[in-house]
Image (cartoon, rainbow, N blue to C red; front, side, top):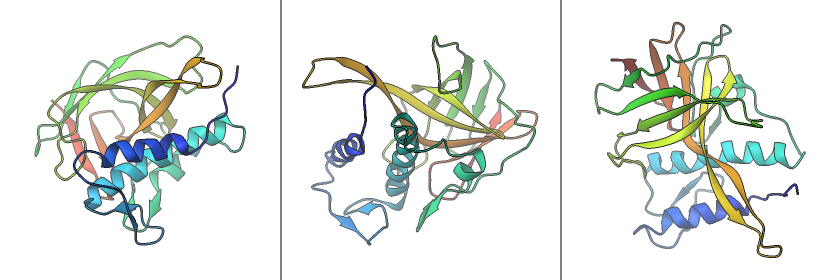
Length: 206
C-alpha cells in the first residue's frame, strides 16, 4: 500500500541530531536553518539533507517533481547553499576507484549496483568518509550510501530507513538523503563535494 509521508519525518531527525549534547533545539534567525549551539557547517548539513529528502517526499506524495540537476547545484538559503558546476555531457565517476581529499584524508569509492524495482535512478553504492571539521558527521568511520544520478554530473547520496506504521503495524523502507551533493568533473578524474556550506571540497583519484 502506498504510504503518504509528511515533513514530520525530518522533524524527528532534527530532534535526534540535537540530542547529542547540544541541548533542546531553538530555531534562530527567522528562515535561517540554524539552532542554538550549532556551527554554520552543522546548520548546512541539516538543511541540505532535509531539502533533498523533502524533494523525494513531494514526488512520492504526487505533489511535485524532482528538482533538476541545475536546481540542486544552485540551491541556497541565507548562509547555506550548494554552488556546484554542472556539465551537459553528464559525466559519471569511475567505479572501484578511490577519490581522496588531500587536506583531510577523506575519501569516496563508488561500486556498481543494480536494485530491483528501482525508481530513484540509483546506479552505484558509495563507501565514504567525510572528515571536514565542524560538521556533525566528522567520524573517521566509513559509511555507505546509495548513489542517485541527477543528470549533468550531479549525484546525491541516500540510505534506506525502515519505519513502522503504528496503526497497521506494517513496516516499509523510506529513503533519507545525506548532506552531500557531488559534481563529477568531465572524464571522471575528480569530484567536487558540497555539504551545504557553499565552499566545495575537491576529491581526486588516487
